[in-house]
Image 1 (cartoon, one colour):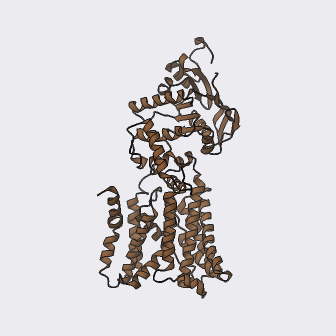
Image 2 (spheres, one colour; image 1 turned 120 degrees about the vertical axis):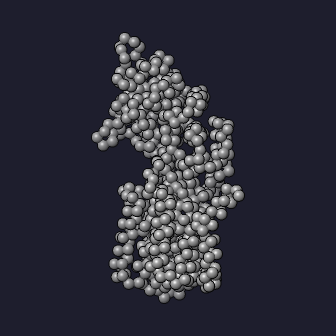
Image 3 (cartoon, rainbow over the protein chains, first blue to last red; image 1 turned 90 degrees about the vertical axis):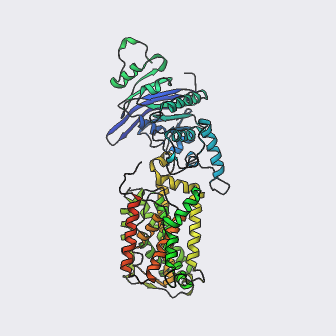
Length: 254
Length: 309
């Protein structure tokens, strides 16, 4: 692939006590590329997501960002390297309003270190209006907002700051058809802007049309990588279940 | 009425019914007298400083059972260290409190022990230590400067200090990034951690502040009484929690405000003061405060619901 490789994972393992959640995963994410990471619940998808977004470190293996080896000690380290994550749970503080969630952990400050509430409300309002022009009443606790609005807050804060790689964990699991279509449009737009996107889902159907490349994880190992254009839903599902291709006769290796 | 006006009305008339209480209390002869107002101000100012710390801890999703024992610790430390100067004495009261708070915070964040149990353990340890040190006897001070700190006319110094602490805490909670982080941690620790907040450090800071304020409040009480007593503050954790809960805090965390807690404080303090004037025996007063706390906890619903995160 000619595009620049933003993130390269090599030999990533993760053990929890005696449980080997990841057994040596290699994964690249490049500019303007949508990679779908699929697999059953418990295959290790969310462990990989949490390693890549800095929630905890791998047991062994290497993470390179723009070719440089990095180690993440907190989600802030990953963010500093342009890796943003939208969690399935959205990771919003329900009691705070949209601007506070938008800037949580990287608040805009006045000269004296106080919250610059006006600037935060303006910036968050603009970013949210970009995603959804009808989303205006942002200064209320996000617990009072709809699922789509909450998702918009989580997405807006992930893409607002210089993002190279966007990780989306089950991006459409909690959304209706209309909102799912909006998220799909957004993913295509971000891809055009040169962002690398990792879509993580157990539902192949929801990601196969968006992805350039599909990576199948099973029991902590990558059991196959396919080019989306050259495969179909049945083949991917088959690989998720059996951990290999349906028949050797169908040809080209990845 | 605008939502803001509705909220204000609720704060003063319904949750808690502060204005109705004060109107009813007007029928008690002497309630609004200067002398009684001074007594009320003195009574609530020491507790109020503790309530502010408790509120911060509760917003962060915790609880501090140790505040009463730490008050006693602060009072005793202040009196014992007075020969080294007033500044040393005042600072030591806060520092000993901060140390106890740090211990609580460490138990909660590093060993992940439930806040009630952690701070209960610290409460018992601190109480045991000062009872042992003082041989269960109060320590007495006759230092003029120290005793003057417990005075102040017409407004007690302790009351002015409490107001200053409350304003500072309010501004920090609402105007600084730190305050937002405390609210976020209290609402959803996982979400806060995923947003890059240092959850453990923030919670530890809250317990440290609560401890320091309790120690400092204990020093002010000792200055007023001229005595550092090892046994004061037994019921303080619960009355402080009552004021914070009345003021909108929740045992589930993420809710509450210093302003609300101050209204809760005046309500609880006014109720106790009115009962004193009516000659209600302190045993019955305990029952009233305890019953109120029980009702508040039930209303809060923390023990009926599972945490939603």
